[in-house]
Amino acid sequence: MSDRTKSRIALALAASLISLALVVGASILMLTEKASGTSPDPLGTCEEAVQDDGFESIDWDYWLSVNPDIIGWINVPGTGIDYPIVQGNSGDPGYYLHHDAGKRWD
Image 1 (spheres, rainbow, N blue to C red):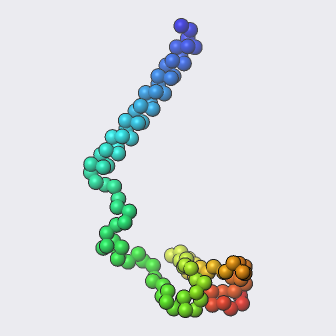
Image 2 (cartoon, rainbow, N blue to C red; image 1 turned 45 degrees about the vertical axis):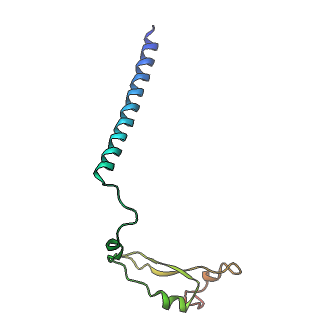
Image 3 (tube, rainbow, N blue to C red; image 1 turned 90 degrees about the vertical axis):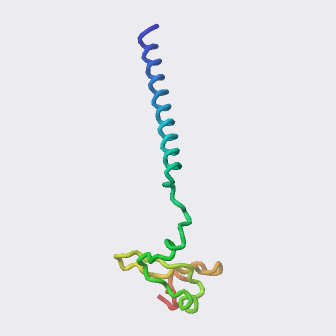
């Protein structure tokens, strides 16, 4: 065998061993996480859902009485961003480009 062939075989063998080590390592990690029960519950518990998240609550009844086109709210703490999100109807999708959430010309 030539040196070139030997180096190709060695490279292929090294790549195979690295791939095998990664698969075995990932499998062991998954098994230990499953055994220790560290997988998070995406739904959480009732107590977690009730905790205060630090954001002010929005009076949706008031805002929907002001404008039923309000579909959400955006608030970024530490900035001046604290606004309702509105969605115009399909007849005039650009309405809110020139009007505020109170339907006043802006």
